[in-house]
Length: 211
Image 1 (cartoon, one colour):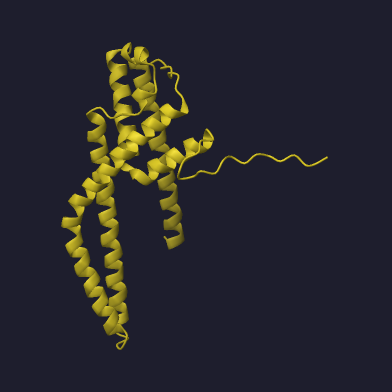
Image 2 (cartoon, one colour):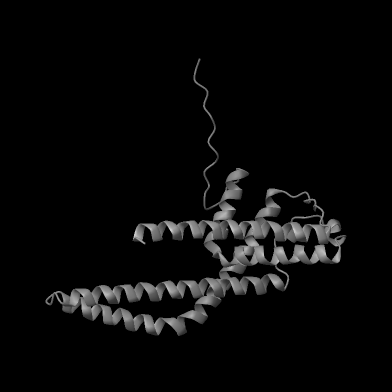
């Protein structure tokens, strides 16, 4: 079998796998819907200020979370990274006079990139774990957007599913970090045409041509 045939077979297998995962998720949702007798939950009346208050709270939590992740990862990962960077610097200096060091330099550069990628992955999973724990203790988003009476009236299984989705969603938002939450806030502000100290420009008004 040629490499092209292997590549084509691998793509078809990947597509079938993705389709299977989507179908499996739909079946799971349908099963849960059938056995939990889930009903729709009405959103409560809220203003743009209420939304921004939720986003601001999430932003503050994300900032604290990011500093905590840094405090954990820097002592663990920074020494090895500094060692690799120092070795790379030495190899680069040697490669200026010795062409045989070029390949060694490329290998060391890929090693540094791989190390940084692993650090980023660990930072994300640590952030997501922190986000889940923070949400588990009560910092959530969906619960603040629905009617309290409707939420209190939910059955046991439905209430559990709602809390689970809320925890995962909030954990994912927090894991995205303050930059992602700031982007959400800006989109909300732009939608409601709100002005702020960061972006004080008023919305543009159409100018009618003079008659």
